[in-house]
Length: 277
Image (cartoon, rainbow, N blue to C red; front, side, top):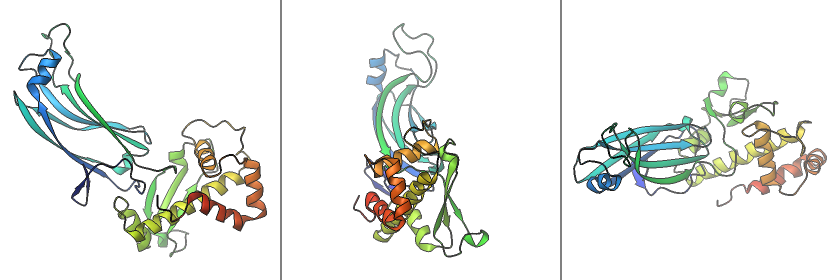
């Protein structure tokens, strides 16, 4: 179950409005038939077993096991799991695994039985997509009054000219802490109100426009360029292909240069600003 404001809801397949400031909290209760688990693995009745949660985030490449609970019962036991994962560690697809493992080494176990601590006896997996089709990148809350940005601006996307740089280090979305609408939208991203959805949709559209225009203004950006995975160039290429499938970069560049206002509207349409998804 996903925990939002202390309310438990069924785990969805995706959280399209999630951002890096939103931690993920999960709860579940697992009924473990300890006897059957030991018997099925060929382990003795006193074999130590633990239930653990393991998560992997494809966007950050991080993996961790924040929860590991030894099972004491000899027959059946209900194990309650409660996990909080820092949003700063996440991104992309969050893979969640609940596993029953051998909790200690069993040197005297039968030849075909697991012996090493950590050997997996049972596994259940689910996935939670934390971002939609748009690339995600780090986000920071900043007081624009202490920067060169206008005090009343809601956000600003910093983006590097180096298309070979890693995406995670090449872009940073700054949110102005003085702008209550933007701040509230990101604070409520896991469970957005109608007004929050509108603000997030606007920011998403503006970020996509900035990224596309940044790409097209770069002479280095072309169909023949070969960018490594997870680089800014690869991210921009994927975004342009998603928004304008089948249209050459040269044609898009001409559209932007000849009719920039109309091209901005084309990006709005491609992003489906204020759409239902």
